[in-house]
Image 1 (tube, rainbow, N blue to C red):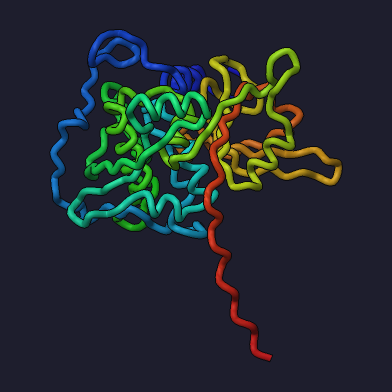
Image 2 (cartoon, one colour):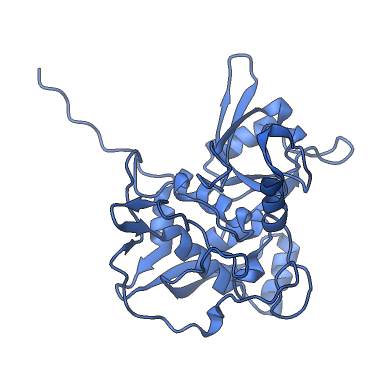
Length: 321
């Protein structure tokens, strides 16, 4: 297999990333097996806070306690969701902090967004292209699926991932679980679109565009990507369901836009972050690609609405004369 990736890595990506759940029957996973995932709609909170869990932790080497490098995708195929979440964390961690409330009893309330119901809202959204959204508060506990194939573990299941001492940071798993509950369970979010996840996470419009357009019309230009990045908009880039992609990309998969820098020659270097994080087989989650080569591995781009800008860092005291 090219790019130093094994068949197992490609099998993992194809099976669990951006693959829609097939209609194999009620309660079945995308490969037809009966799911053993918990029924989140009927779940009773334990109301016992795990002393080894914290919503937010600042790990050694981190600039702050909420970061896109807190994300390590599990066996669930929700790379589109985790990449969207990572983009929000990169742009403004305060949005994540405001999204989640620790109830102090082992449960957490997450504010997500859904379309307003009713014919009037539907018609208005269809006419304007901007569906009306309303916040919905979803409460979950700190119990997360394990990492077996049958129940497809949630994010950050590695024993040493997002840990400081004996405590484990869980904001990623909490929001992932709330998103699953909003959509009917974990198996319902295995495969999806980042634009939908962005809207559910922020309440703002998001859209998905073909990287190259159609017959030379449309597409995503370097200027589009630079402007979205500078405006504080979440950007997720998607690969096709294809083997042997260049630049160590895997597909179908969704990547965060970590950075884009335009050189003196006017050409941009794009840095992507893989939501696999430091999982086995992903030694370096960052991938650098020239914009002019991006379409060789990227087929579409999701862009969300601009997030509030974080406050400037506090001024450093002046050195004594």
